[in-house]
Length: 544
Ligand code: G1P
Ligand code: ZN
Image 1: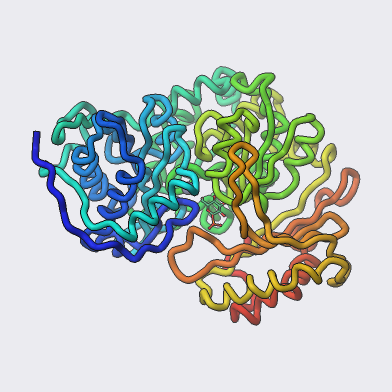
Image 2: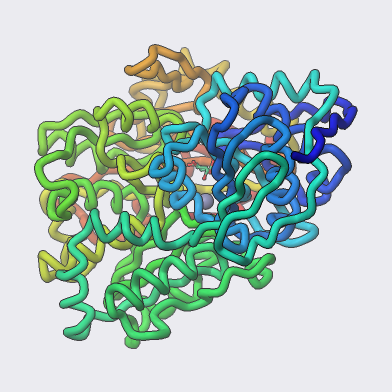
């Protein structure tokens, strides 16, 4: 057994990891001891039993392999008995969650900066997931952060890099490293959940689709599942090879960064379904021929139909959505007689509800949808559930959407992002909002009158923990709403997110332009928050 080496070190800058772990520029992670300090802080906090199993995988971005090799040596020095690592260092975030659960691992290191760009001058990230397969809860991330502020050594063994490209076992120190097929376990799980034969039938009888993997991690998963197992034509998956810099693009499946897909879907040559996923495979974009589905609507539409999929028959216990996500899902929950939970932004808040069997499906407006099959949001899962529903019901995306709105009404929805703004201005804006909360109710902004305003605080119904300060909600009497919050995942300056929503009941204007429908809310947001004054910007950088 190789010797354990103790490397003296200094605490690092100590910025608290956000909702998605530690996310920084690659150059920051490349500083001596930086990744090591964080990984050691994780190991110190979770203090694995000798022989414990750890899963390691990432989205394949630049710097992934370097950190994986170091993490393997450190795991060996910290007493782990076995590391499971995806071939090529690859594991999509939902696949990592599944592998942690399936092999009863203690936890996993998920290396990703999600939808942020990759490359030597771009972003990297490390997140720790616990034994249920989900992101560590705030108690654990807080302890890890505290540990990074006092750490003075990290442990490693002296060992060569392992061959990450050869499936099989290797020894590092006293530990076994198993390089596993990153796709097989996940693809088998999808086959257990969904009616693959129904989907195969529509694929064989002319239903067409395009899946844009955005040169990120889902390429190999989508090729195996959509083309090999479901029989969609070769070439259905585009940009299917994971690249370290994602081909220079933002692997973010929205209408800006997946514009080619959007343009195709709005053209006469559109296939029946267009879909995309992000850098690490947890987000999804769904576009029917001529019909974009907002993530909030997708959650509601999937929830309304989820029992069509074999693994969900007769077992929808509840729906959960993040607070800024539209209330479309609430109406489905009400109609189906199941509870709807409103959680803070970030997937980790769904974990307890899923573990307790209180929620079965959950989602966020930021293109994340998932269920109790893993403890992360899951891009391909959402695409497959859509396919399963369309295959069994024999209708198009557009028909399904229209039918849904005619029954439940429609929540028009948009998010305006102001990126890379000065932190001081962003904080002043949020402070200004907080100072107004008490006086806003009853105030008029154009046609809108405020009915309620608060700073969202969440009490977890399972463990009673309280998460305060999760965004400012301003509700209007007509059922519309504006929400303000600062992003927790950015790596430069601050990002202000303004979420806008208005509701039209069945038999109202169900096919209007979103921009026009939200104009009063946009104006009210500016009046209430003074966005231009605090940010120096006259409009958002990104509208999704
Ligand atoms: C963003 C999204 C949030 C999502 C997170 C991780 O966080 O808004 O819904 O869970 O990315 O993908 P934010 O930057 O808003 O803190
Ligand atoms: Zn992601």
